[in-house]
Length: 442
Image (tube, rainbow, N blue to C red; front, side):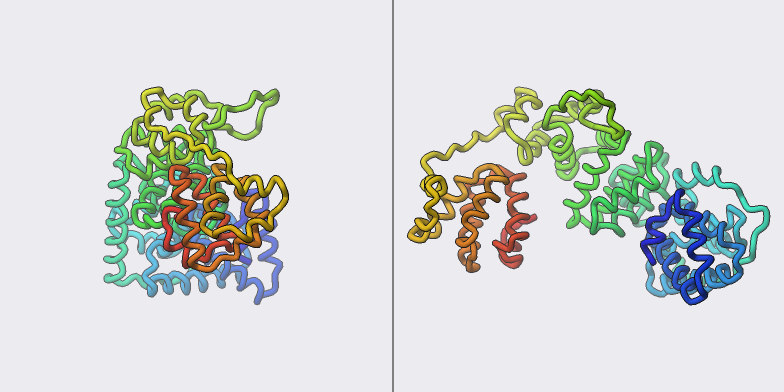
């Protein structure tokens, strides 16, 4: 049932309303329970959720169940001290009152909180811009629900928002930014940190060129609090680059802040994803935005190149392609490509005489295997399949293989990362052993 409301859109709004309204009472209650839960964790869709309720407010049983479930879940979040979801519920109730769908005590509850908390609820560019497009109801219905907001919890809410605000300022927020949108972005990437595609999809439901800056600050503030999720946050930034206008806003933001290692790594991955391979000539207009064709953004990216960024780019990218992109004064940073010739294991493969491996020293086999595969992920996987019977390794053998693999490939960061994932996927290496090698499995 959750999926029904997660996938709510302009197109299916009426269908979802009909599905709930025509359900039996027991199922209707389950639908409302699921809906309210989703309201709390997907606050960026608050206007769409409010419009759904507009379509169902004529059903007395829906109104009654909604009031009961909202009161129950809001007070449960208060008891749990889940402040982010509590604020999402207050914003939802505020929008319902603003649209004259219901009248209740949301505004009076919000007024008990300090100015910054009110900004988190009210100061949302995406909400302010779009709520004007929704027609207000001619007549509202009284919603009878009581929010238990005692003074100690109200103080905690204020402290929570103050700490969040300080973190946002630390990563680049200023007085012109929408605190509510930054908070929504922060909440979004923390809630959906299990699926990059879903996270970007949900972000695209609310954020656009008018508030991409707030999205950027929200992600950076989440990364500041959860640095162990840095890999996920990096890939979110890179994936959002497919959205028209995002990279332009990101580059504008980066131009005005002090770049740190995380931002350098994001820029390096943007290069590897969009600019490393020259775009092919196209004889048709693509429906999708293509960052690799935006010369102005590419020129802006090049203006960021310094020694720190060049070093990061070298970790992920093909040296030959980098030579065509980097200024010559950074060529000295490039490691020399290794060349391995006369690898006996390669001759064994070519002669289809795999049994010869039986007589080889294990470490010698590992050494030759890594040299033969260097530096191609596809070659590595092909050879891994050919020699699969020799990769049923003890834990000591796994360590020996990883030591040799890293020594031979230590400057091939992207290659190491991709191969590391495959070693875990195909159970060549145990997770407990992988944890001992953070430079390979990070």
